[in-house]
Image 1 (cartoon, rainbow, N blue to C red):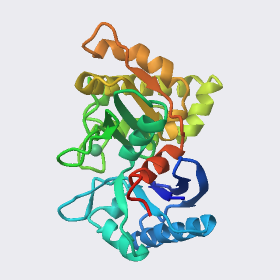
Image 2 (image 1 turned 135 degrees about the vertical axis):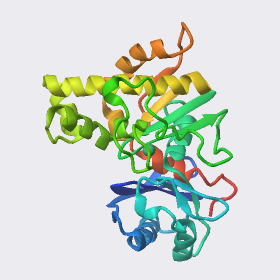
Image 3 (image 1 turned 90 degrees about the vertical axis):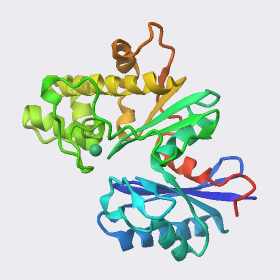
Image 4 (image 1 turned 180 degrees about the vertical axis):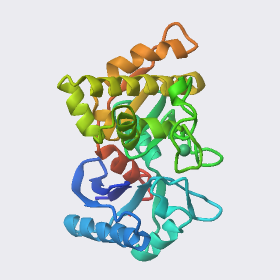
Length: 304
Ligand SMILES: [Zn+2]
């Protein structure tokens, strides 16, 4: 039987899965990302593959979702919020460490491909997959096909400016990309925590803010209310552009149950259509969508 390994290289953790040809999980592992350590990251990826292959007792194809893009012409990583990867020949180094070809894709593209293939948006014609986590990314799947794009940045709306900014949102927080007021600076987990700190002076992380809001804390509820409004504006601009049948949220903040009712309630005023049938959906595969999409980067006839 053919096995595929999919790896999701995240800003704080590296997750790996081995799936069989029918998509069933045969093994999975998770380790902490060696933050700021490029050689350590390459070694961690190679070690994770070896460990998973030990678990399943055979070799497998390897696909890796990364927080950025590998430029085809140079083989170097760009646009990574894990900044220690930028400008590094990650594909070459991982392939050398493993002694085999490895397929790479943006982590948000892996997520979108997984959810559009056999996930929450299975069977829908046009799908926008969103990662709301350590960073913010997006991927577009049209008719079951991932849209990579001429510059390999299709769907990357996290570094567009936040649409319709209010006076207190402009010019907005500084972003690692060199701009100010990027969508990511408001809608990532650290962005949510920074917004709460700016307004209240409280240093709470995103999960703590969500828990306190659920328990009725008024300042945390206000922070989530600002978050909902900003997400509605940011997704409205995507709907105006590609008019997807479904938008699937992923990443840590996709666990906020309030988003799925409250964001569609607010995005209408920014969308050029009186009737909006686009569905906003939670991920079916949850945290596993990134690794599953990476595994499916190898088509059936190409896997080891
Ligand atoms: Zn930016």
